[in-house]
Every structure is written in C-alpha cells, then in structure tokens.
Image 1 (cartoon, rainbow, N blue to C red):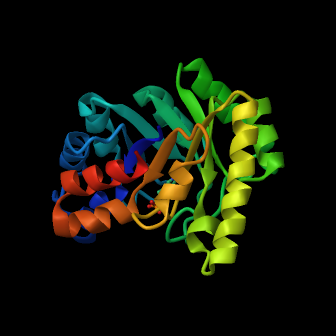
Image 2: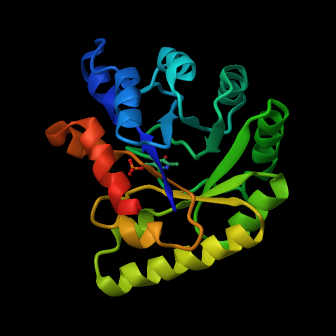
Length: 237
Ligand code: PXP
C-alpha cells in the first residue's frame, strides 16, 4: 500500500505572508501525524519563502514519523541537511522565480553536483531520493549515483486536460515506476496530486510514498488538517 508524505510548506507560506508566528508548521506536522501521515515533508528553499531554518530544527526534534527534507543540490543546502540529519532528503531542482518546483531534477545534466550531494548525504547516513521526470535516462543516472529512492514527478499527469492525455501520462508513470523498482530503488511520486487524481497513481504496482501538499492544505482550510489527511489516506489505501 502506498504511504502518504504530507508536505506542510503552505502552512509556512501563510505565516510568512505576515512574517508572524502563526500558523506554525510544527503544529501542522503534529496534526498531520494525528490524521495518519506516514511522513512529513518540507522544502527548505534557498530564498526561505516558506519553511525557515528554525522550522526544520524544531521538526527534526518533534516529528515522530519519517521527516523528508526537500532541498536543492547546492553545497550550502547539503551542509544544512547533513547537520540536521532528516530521515530522507529529496533532491529537487530550484529556481528563484518559480512558483513551485517545475519539472524534475535533471540528474543527467547536473551529474557532478548530484554526485557530490548524494555522496555527502549518504556519508551522513541519510537516505537520498531523487525527484525526477519519469524518463529512463534520469532513472538510470539516479541508480548510478547510488540514490535509495526516486520520486517520480507527477506534474504532467496532474496537468493533463483530456482523458487521453491523462491516460498517456499514467502509462509513462507506470513504465518509469517499473524501471525504478527493477533497479532496486524505492518508488515515490508526487506533485500536483489531488483528491480527484491520486487513486490511479496510488494503484501503480509497489508504489511507496506519495508526497502531497497543496491539495491537502487547501482542504484543511475548510475541514481541518487531521481530517484532510485522513481523507487522503483513505483514498490512497
Ligand atoms: N514532491 C516534490 C518534490 C515537491 O517539490 C512538491 C512541491 O513542493 C511536492 C511533491 C508536492 O506537490 P503539491 O504541493 O503539488 O502536492
């Protein structure tokens, strides 16, 4: 059965809108755990637009389930990850001007920097997941670098506007998922998943962690976070 990683960045986004102390992503993590989250995911961005260094430190000390840190492959971010030691680091691409992560990490093009990042994280005893597009070259490169897991980018599937396109993207994801598993990597997926589109992805053979943020936090505004997480857990189960 697929597991659920709840991305709580948007809770910090609301807080940062006023540069105040609420809502606190640390509370959000506790409520997500109450709702059945299997993992808590945060992205410490270089511009600190939502999650702050303090959040990561407190979450490291308080989160009782798996803590998954998303970060860029820069030496400064890898320094932080190696010091804080989350259970898992997911390496993601990062551009300052983007609204959210666009596309997977191009492991092929940034092989040297990825290699250095993976090596340092592995030496620190941290499991490394690569957030990649569902294409063979990126999976092969992730395997070569010694990643433990690959998180397949589900954005194209989520953004598909016709049934035919959605089906095509699901087939692409399913093929990539089989490659990831065959290579011995754990299989994760995420980006753009919602209560409406998550089920076919959760059904992919041996799917592991689904990382979901926007849709859950959006629903939480109306039904509360623990309930929103409970409803997502029920769907992916
Ligand atoms: N996985 C990764 C690697 C991400 O960068 C994000 C967005 O921060 C997500 C999953 C969650 O995406 P969404 O907020 O669209 O559910």
